[in-house]
Length: 153
Ligand code: CMP
Image (tube, rainbow, N blue to C red; front, side, top):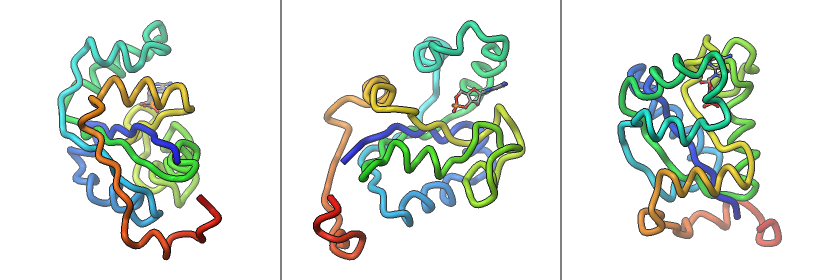
């Protein structure tokens, strides 16, 4: 089992796409184990996007991500880090394949609706940045026997 962090960004909230995006992950068979609505501060943005702080697009990215509430969540599932990234599609909504979340709902490089951790190290760091351990609530869904064979986990 892997855990990954997603952020449903301010564009996702304002465009009333929260429900649709959450539903796509649920329908895939992934488990939401933590979720909260919050405001990203400039300090948190700089920590979260540390690798981008020196890039030319960072000031606009910080204004965007701090410009309205977000919903942060932890998703759990087999190979969840890769599976969730593939469900999002390419960074730019203009390049993301049809059928992916960004491909279907975004036409922007910056306003790409959802962030997801890009590897195990990032996932561990980002989950710790947004959630305390006691805010994460793993559970075994009763439908698990109908989501995958026993020997797949
Ligand atoms: P995300 O997956 O959250 O990771 C970094 C974010 O920076 C990215 O999604 C976009 O929102 C934004 N981003 C990436 N590249 C660019 C760019 N070239 N111009 C503006 N914003 C960008």
